[in-house]
Length: 185
Image (cartoon, rainbow, N blue to C red; front, side):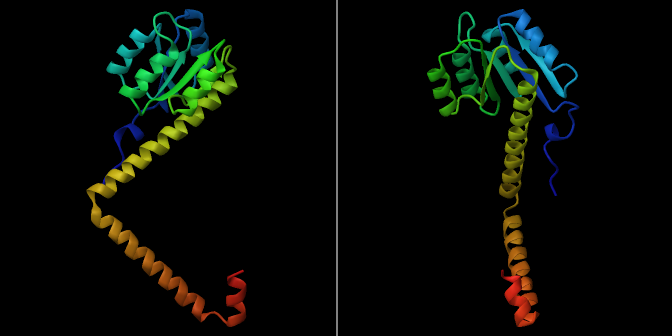
């Protein structure tokens, strides 16, 4: 039997979160809000530094400010989506064109939109849900690779399901008729 992917078992952190904001106070505030959480934190003061970090480290979630000099958070997160599609993308903004942000979310470019100042509980819940999504996607990729690498496994599972159903029908047939009627209700 194949073992699970290493990243699902060995890290003491649930996920690595990259916080991108040109304002040091905001980066510090988010870092403080996530201090003593089960997330490994990385910080970048802008999109160029963030792209460098993404190229050097395994990052699971990016939280980016929208209003940054040089490149907006939306533009940056579109690049992240194209280069690192498995990374969950969250945008943070104190003022935003809601139509643009909703379009970005609806087109699959963003996972969530958070308003500044961000409530700590909302941030933690958002990250928790983002990690659940990541874990499900990783588990699905793992199971798909397992099935692809062991085509006989699918046949074995299908045969086992046929045997299970036949066994259930046989047990049902042995029940007295009045019990069968109540078993189907």
